[in-house]
Length: 72
Figure: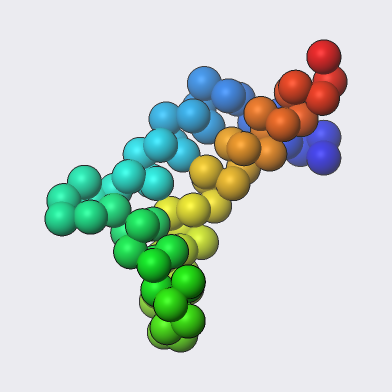
């Protein structure tokens, strides 16, 4: 996981937050896709792509924060 150490937190944080919350109205894509996932209706490839696109950076941010905490 050394590649995760090379990602700047100051870059990852705004990217993760912006993509997780975009678009701001009427509701963020990530929230919409998570609702589809939990309802079992996340089947269209574009919806799966949207989930990965909007949720991926947030997952990386969480992993980075966990790794930074464990290295203390």
